[in-house]
Length: 270
Image (cartoon, rainbow, N blue to C red; front, top):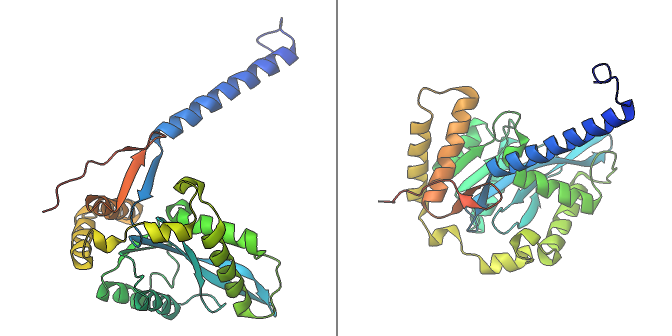
């Protein structure tokens, strides 16, 4: 630019380019905001998001915990035994939720070996739970759990470089922090209410649909959507089929842009 505009001072050219870049970034942010798609979960227990996290180290070994979060009420709880999760551990967590009447219709997770092993797949099928798997290398697909982990670990002082006396110490600290946040932290995205208040006020999925009906319709939609598709395309289509089924039963609202306008047209449920 300086070569082409010899009559202008370099400082003025730099200022002009900075202004042009700023205007472009503003325009790009508006464009992204208009096209951004979101999901509002309207009832408790429709989806449970789960993810593993590194809590610290004990005697030279890394320690871990599992976080589970309901995106409707933002209610969080920690689980695990301090070690890297296995398929058996995942099933134990799901069995615990089932025993308490908290087993969701949809379980959202990444593609960790424990989450996608055959034993877990069979358990989910037997108990009619739909597995909402993230796309490969798309951590934002499980953003609910990711945000919960960041929040709790920051509050609890856990993570890389933290030395723990026992492997379970990280799990217990995460659970104690989750309980405190559930009780006392206002959620601005939920009108300033706490997660505990929301769990007492929000309806549950079983007020909208029975598990068997939802599982059958979601499974059929997933099978139809992924015909002749493989890889990332198949996973994206599978995820969309699950979300469409959730919306058909009034369990979620999918939105686009900042105005929260629904971009899916609900079909009539027979």
